[in-house]
Image (cartoon, rainbow, N blue to C red; front, top):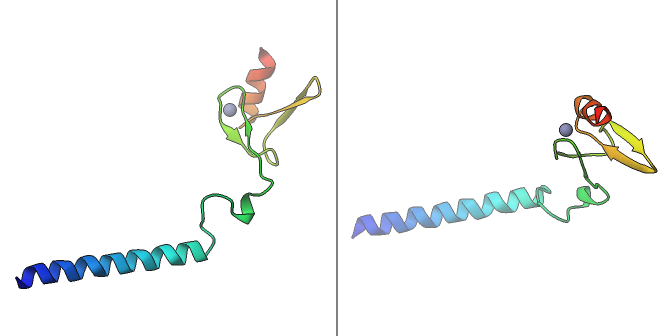
Length: 82
Ligand SMILES: [Zn+2]
């Protein structure tokens, strides 16, 4: 009987700690979607390997008024070779 009470107590403790940890993470801005940091950041797809890249630092290529973004110079060269 005492054992069941102990287990229940431990479970309640784990839940309390879990909730506390979640609250701390959310308070620190670790929310996954719709955070202020994500606004305006649009990812472009590398047409060679399919990786999503940030246009601000990705190697780019202008083709017919369209800009393509690549994950690396290697993929850009691969595209130019076609
Ligand atoms: Zn790539």
